Length: 199
Figure 1 (tube, helix red, strand yellow):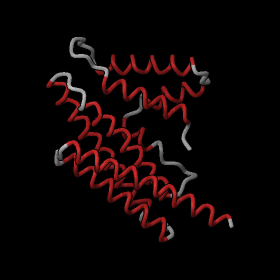
Figure 2: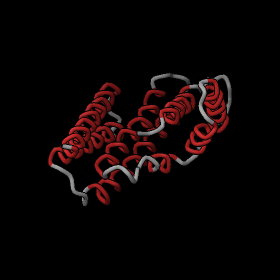
Figure 3: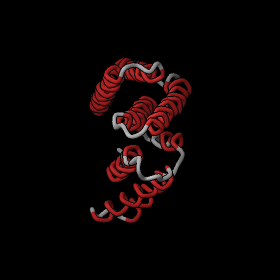
Figure 4: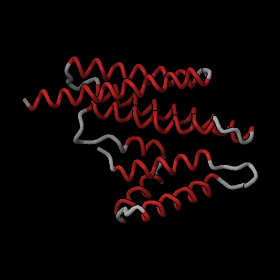
């Protein structure tokens, strides 16, 4: 399991970076990101996070997106678990961009965010597909795990297609929810397999 502090903090940083860009304040993306990071650090300190947890969050937040995503590949998890984790995180990051599009600010902001969303999907899909073929496919999995994980990968692909094809927002929302539901099903299968192997 990932650190709850890191996950919550990154969520705040990304949300702040995505949506807190008022049209009347000409700030750069770097300034916005730094302000969001400063607020997150202050919040973590107030909630009692250790300096080590804060340092990990700061380091992680400054990585390029592709490296952030790859950092969720764990050596102690199975390829199937890692693939589902990558899909879950890719969906999380890209849905933040989609959510920010629902907040009208300026035309330029909307166009810039749409480009970021496409870049997010492109990068996520590249990392996920590479891991799928190079690590997951060659690995051994039970039929239950394989069925759940392959379906998760297909749902992710459909979600990506809805973005690339500029599908209406409600269809993108449906595709996103389908991925989330399938991720949950896959995680339940992982748990069942773990319990079965302990017997």
